[in-house]
Length: 134
Image 1 (cartoon, rainbow, N blue to C red):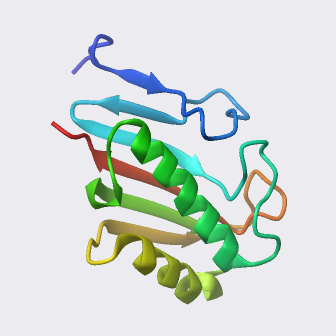
Image 2: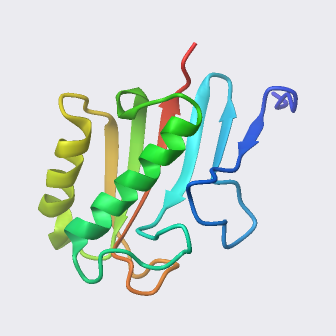
């Protein structure tokens, strides 16, 4: 199946820092909205939260919220998340932030420990897939 370029949209989210490589922050297609990996950085691409996994996770979810708002979505529209952490021991702290953000909504989720992330000092990165509003 060939992708119809007329309905594939690459999104630039002004509330987020500029991409640091050749990728789109989000792409929508076929009723779905794919958010690229989001790091705990501010608009200037500076690490936010210091060494605190909780503060970093809160910043990542804040940034995902900006990406969702860009197309009229909310966290209730998220179908799937892929969470990358540099220490699996941080799982409970990340889950506490996720519970606060999502409330009763429980998207499908994968959590993976990895060696490092693109921003030095970052402990978490999350990508998400959401359904677009009709």
